[in-house]
Length: 239
Length: 239
DNA sequence: TTTGCGGCTTGACGGAGGTCAAATATTAGT
DNA sequence: ACTAATATTTGACCTCCGTCAAGCCGCAAA
Figure: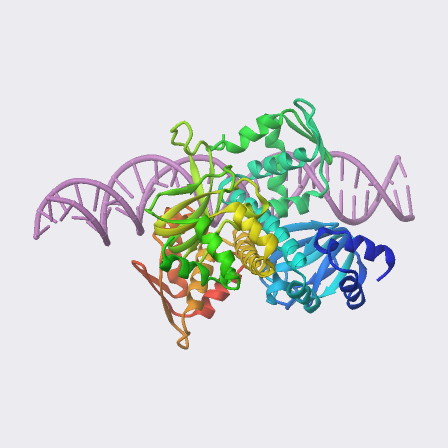
């Protein structure tokens, strides 16, 4: 593991307050590898041998139904549950609990990934209080991300879920009074999967949102009024 | 807070290894209250003033869309995201991060609940390593519960989600070769909401599962073969 | 420019599941 | 047991969304 990778890794909140000795041991035990798009980090059901830390690029966590890598068969559906990028850690729950992965992970954008041995991580939990605290805070944030998604999935329509996604993107930018422009960072297929709909239905949802002042041109999106979008997400009878 | 309540509370893994002094302080700062069905513990958007620990009974976490307690209007839909029972803690993420609740909580079965002040909990995180560790483990388990639900929600049909629920129930019992009998602990309306479907559709899903050897009589369910149910959940083209 | 390819959109169609209303089963009260 | 109130099921209907099949656009190689 080279200097730059170590520096990036240990600057993360999760590791920031560990003593140097612990960091060195971690760096020795682990390694960093660059993975191309489509590379599979692990499959559902495997045991968690490493904690993966993303230094750059992006990785999707996805669940699948049917055969997957098995009999080479095709009738295999999958759905993206979460997308992780630089600074994110996957998947702490499986590593901490030493349980098999519930989902699989695949690189969606060339990623530089640190592989830290699972038992070393469990040792850190045991020996360093601050690591445990940071892990808890991180897990708490991740729980909220899933909770939010689950809520949307259970009670909002496809266009509403898209609208919610746009709102979170817009919150990242500084509001300019009314209108906001945001840029999508995912291709349609990936976004559709993450939002829990087919790509075709995402297209229709995009068309639908024109009625509430949202216009798409490629990956650029102009939102006439975030407040209007927000109201749209609260509507019960979907038009 | 009486002796029995304290004993039950401090027997939980989360508190088990705390020094007596810390426990006493916690017991002094908090209180226990019994809440009837329908009682609302908190609403989405409120700040987390307490960590709630369920000593008995059950509580649902639900998201809502539309007005809720507002203008007394009716067009208000809600969906249960998680159900907690004795020994569970709600909602650690909001308390630890000191952020507003993402969802609301309502008692679904008369519950005895300990209210522990949020800042006392955050103090424990800071001062007691073991508490932080236990919190992290708990959050990891909770993350997996939501991840599993989200996966099911995104890629399985309503009857398949019901089947998955039955499988988890069946896993709690000792397998008797093939057939297993389980008992539902939720009324249809609540179960339907948790599974992300309408009560009517739950009824139809129940009827549907007769085809794979599952028979319902009131709250009693007989499963001819868990393996058969499992296979049913993997099917892509539903039916 | 042409060809080809992949990503995205559009149209047509069907099915899963939501909604409303009525029927039936359960429970509670008297 | 009888009635009222509530919970669950069933039926009819309709809509959202998934699927399949073209069509379209942009981009890269030739």
